[in-house]
Image (tube, rainbow, N blue to C red):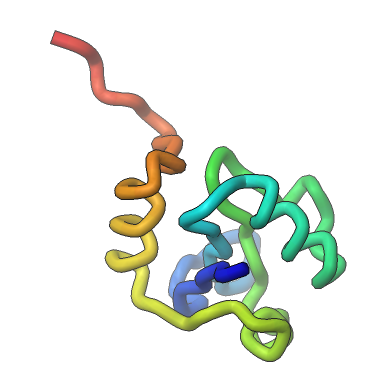
Length: 90
């Protein structure tokens, strides 16, 4: 099982956030997040939002640290990317 986490560079709700993803399956991602105690409401389309104070917990649990661009590339290549605004066809 390999899940990935990017640095907590994303601001929101008065704190900084990371993204936790899998390049294998959403089932793998959900299982890892559940083991960390991350609430289901933290899942957004294709990733979990992880607050900066939980970043170390995710890494200690086995999440692999990668940059944000690499994270997006991996989930896109795996066919697991679900963008907010899909591009219009045509």
